[in-house]
Every structure is written in structure tokens, then in C-alpha cells.
Image (spheres, rainbow, N blue to C red):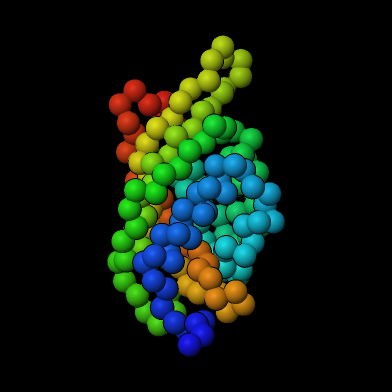
Length: 150
């Protein structure tokens, strides 16, 4: 039986999607590779430093962060279903993020290590039938001991 756009996303699908999303962020994939992963007109992403809407908003944020952070490693720790309707599911995603940051003209880079607690709303794409991020909210950052701060 074929999957339809209205079929609920499974926890496995969303976890695999989150892991693939973070792999792309780790290697600073070309911007165009994110387009099939993000909702078009209703995308909203809330980061500690800024809220962006639509793909153009994401593009501006992405251009900034890939030129700020390097040696990134994201590790998905947990994905939990919080609620679900017939079109959108809400998940709590917890990811450990490690990244280096260099503030010129400091002699050394700094290492950030933290757990990011996030809320994602996802739906199935009508075109690809794969998950799409509709909203992405960073709820809390918990720094590891000795970590540099944003």
C-alpha cells in the first residue's frame, strides 16, 4: 500500500529525518539541498538570536552561521512525539551540538558544547511524501561545563 500525504509520520521517519538534517548542517551542505526539507510559505524558525520565516529567512540565517561556526558535530539524543493531528505532528528533539567559533583577532578558537531542546512541527510533503519542517523552535540551550557561550 502506497504512503499518502495524509498518512501520519512515524517516529522512526522523524528521527531519521532529524539525523539527516543535522548531518547536512555539520558539513555545511549547499543551501539548495535544504529546500526539499522545509515547508514553503508557512516555515517559521525560532533561534535564540533571531526568528526567521520562509526559505529566504532560513537562507539568511544559514549563510550567517556557516560563516561563523566550524568543526560542527550534531548528535540527536532524543525525539519524542508530543502531539499529532491529521496533517502536522509536534516533536521534542534534543540534540547535542558541538562547534568551534573564532572571534577575530583572538589567538584561539572557542569550543561550544551544549544540548539544544527544540520543538519541531513536521508534516508530510505532498510532493515527496517525506517529512518537512513547518516550525522549528529552540526552546532551551543547556551548556556543558567549561563550554564557551553564544
